[in-house]
Length: 203
Image (cartoon, rainbow, N blue to C red):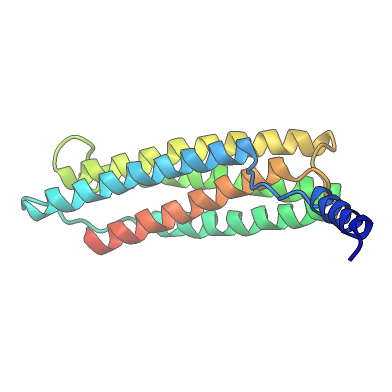
């Protein structure tokens, strides 16, 4: 092989490598922060449920029937997760009218869930289950209250998404806002189902 051929082959190899740089893995910083916050919430509730089991095993535990309104509120929250996914699908199709409708319905279902939880507290009081007293009642109030705090943050995220949708800042080429909102809302749904099943099982 001639020296010129070798040099040409070398240049073509360098050009080939130069034209195909290695892809670097990256993650949206906003989504990364959201996942960190969700992970922190998981750790918070995991520690609380662990403490619940430890205290329950010590005895002197008040057993009570969880009011039915908490079951109905769970159904409402599951429905809101369905409408949240509907909103995401409409955003991908650039259907702004249905997108705004879906986000609005999700928000209203979230407000209904919140109201039903508060009414559920009233039912507990009627059953003489109070925040101060037996730890069984205290834990129930703490779990539901902490979840409601998270839910209020989720409602604020929904309002922000609805405002952005109204300004047409959410569409098929700009999905980050609704993806983050959907992630938060679905997490709240899963978190509540976990808490509700946990309380039904170990009450």
